[in-house]
Length: 197
Length: 197
DNA sequence: ATCCGACGAGTGAACACTCACCTAGTCAGA
DNA sequence: TCTGACTAGGTGAGTGTTCACTCGTCGGAT
Image (cartoon, rainbow over all chains, first blue to last red; front, side, top):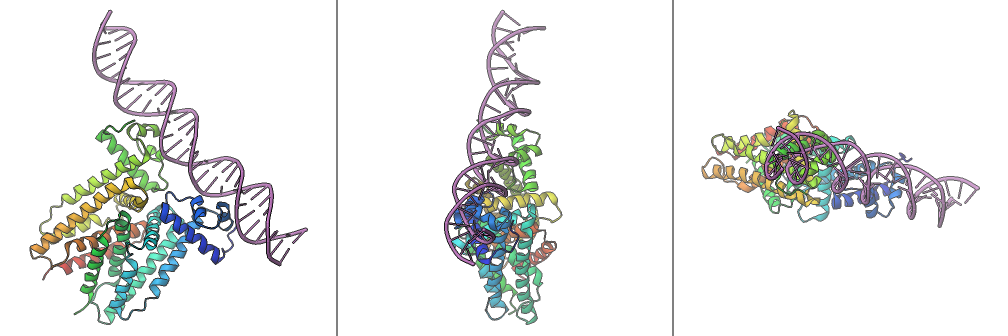
């Protein structure tokens, strides 16, 4: 009966296996057998570290939250405008990047299950709120420094995050080629409209 | 062995039951037993009209596509700006409207499953493309009539649909109160920025 | 000798789907 | 008008399969 902290190396390996299996089969068809098949372990071996399938999924989620947060915190662009564009670049996943696409769709899938599964809500909420915060901070800086017009930082953050999340949610999931580029253009034009001339 | 056209009345009853069960339990936990519990029929009775659970889900999807399309086509506002605002109002579901929230989350859930389930892709693609088309047409009209700046209609449509879909995908699913209002404000400001002064 | 990490082989429950059967209505023929 | 055949609509009780999870055991490091 674990509950002891899982060694980071094992946690990362299992999270990685959940990630791959989730991208391949989707949440509804995700089984512990498939997770085991993507890892070096046997099915029973997974249960040595985790008590339930849900805990394994949460491990994947926590690892993704960390990854995204690290990505966002490491932006080294200068000035609010460049920083905002960099954030959009990170959030708007490339259609052709198989790996990133899989992960993002997997997270979207978990998101849509959040209303029915309490254990998923915590990490997901943390992830979205952190991202919202990062964007809002950049916009606030921009407004204070006189780079952006006097817009509402929280509203602007909500719009940008909704748009990028929504893009993964419908265009990536349906394989709607071209929408990504159109959206990139529109989002760039939106940022233009924030900048004071 | 059905495959004969399902009588519209029966189709609507079953679609409604799928809708309710989906909103209550989510896609991953959706069972034919739960669908039967939400309808007047028995589990076996459902199979009199449909050959598989997937077909019942598609029936729900088709009925939702119709409903949304009817809503969008019936907008009677005058002029591109008012029409665009009306579309946003329809797409940005009210947090407190339990029913609409359930339906939208259910559709999001199916969306995230589309990559792994071919039968869902068709109706969903049709739905999103129709909506994109409606928005793009309004924007195109606005540009031609000199009401809007010379923006790219397809990009603008992609941004608006992404934002509203994304909102359901993360804020509604996570119960993030307040984000809806912030987003409404930001979207309204965005439409302001499209209008020529 | 002990214990950590791991596994093959289950186990019981839940699920999608089927089947034999029922009920009520319609209608032809006596 | 009664009777029997037929059909559309529907069901309760399964069936085979898949799943999450467990258990007894085992190799190897200490």
